[in-house]
Image (cartoon, rainbow, N blue to C red):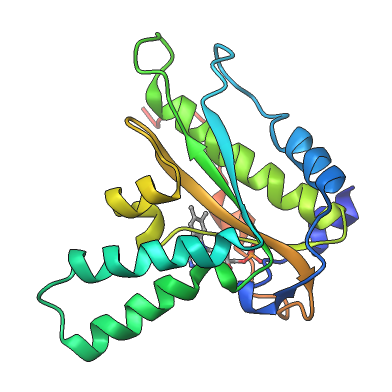
Length: 193
Ligand SMILES: Cc1cc2nc3c(=O)[nH]c(=O)nc-3n(C[C@H](O)[C@H](O)[C@H](O)COP(=O)(O)O)c2cc1C
């Protein structure tokens, strides 16, 4: 398990191809993904799977939303990005959209519930890697613009925590520099008098 964690790298959607996880593999991955700390047991997350033909249909809905949201943009640039939105989900064979749905009426802070959604995304990344798949956690315009997020499946009071692309990696990027953990770590001590 430690070895798997130590060698995991995000694989960009363009380097992800078929086969996508089977129904059984997806079910197993999602079951692992939800094994996260969840203060108050609110289950403040859920999944929307975008796969197969639905990927193109969703893109056809995102592109006009992008144009409508950017009326002032230089037309050629707008068309370029609208095209990127149209092809967004076609880049990989499957995307698992993790929706954060904090319960605002309960005593658990929304921040903690959103952290739990982030933990689901990361667990899903690890589960995909351990199952032999590549994955990448992205967000971007489609995840954050309210109408785009709604068309992907985020309802009232919900936000997209991550679009996790999953598929078979044709290549894995070389390792990137990792943070200097020692420089980021301190041991608490009382302030000097
Ligand atoms: C919430 C969140 C959103 C992200 N969104 C994007 C994104 O839209 N595009 C992108 O290229 N990387 C995005 N990233 C970064 C990648 O997921 C990833 O961290 C990066 O490629 C480093 O790869 P590694 O997992 O191998 O360290 C995001 C990361 C997080 C945590």
